[in-house]
Length: 240
Image (cartoon, rainbow, N blue to C red; front, side, top):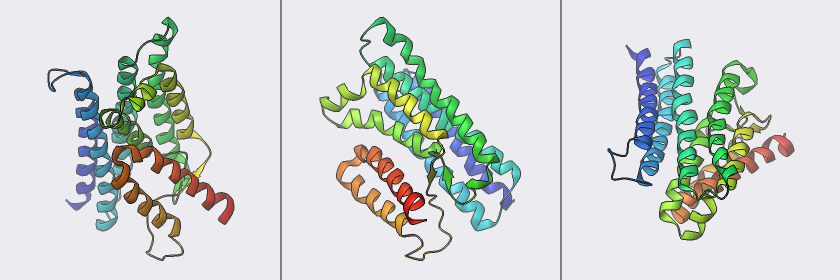
């Protein structure tokens, strides 16, 4: 039975993605309006927890399987591909439509789902990604997107006006889609050991993330992703 425990946790990841899509579209479940997107963002954060736990449990129980690998990608496609696109699409709808053209930009949100599918397919077939990532991982991209409605809700009007701009959202959607499949090596947070020198940049990332979250709360997530990319560039472009 133990080989099915990681798969059960993966299914909880998938359930979170499904619930997030429901929260985003079904206004009868939550009061109304912008709160729907916020609750959908929370489900991405919960799905990320389950996504971390299924791998941890699989390693602890030595319960690896090909089905588990494929199931993980399918769950990630919903929770970290489709749901983030839905959230960005709703942010487009909340934004003031500047021109008639901007209404057609709304659908660029679904480029994130398309490129997330490409990213996950590449990950399953690319032997270079056994130890590190190439391209931004879908959970990191999804958590960044999940932070946007939370930043809007808990920050001042400046950030709301900046984020809820259809042209910003259009550039953001295409930019994040490009990062998903970009040939950019990125650090994996899988620790083979606790050696300080070997994992120095990982420790810096984790410590920086903890401090930034305490100070900036949800607004820290974009900064953390930026630091993650910079530390990865240092690791693979300069140290190696």
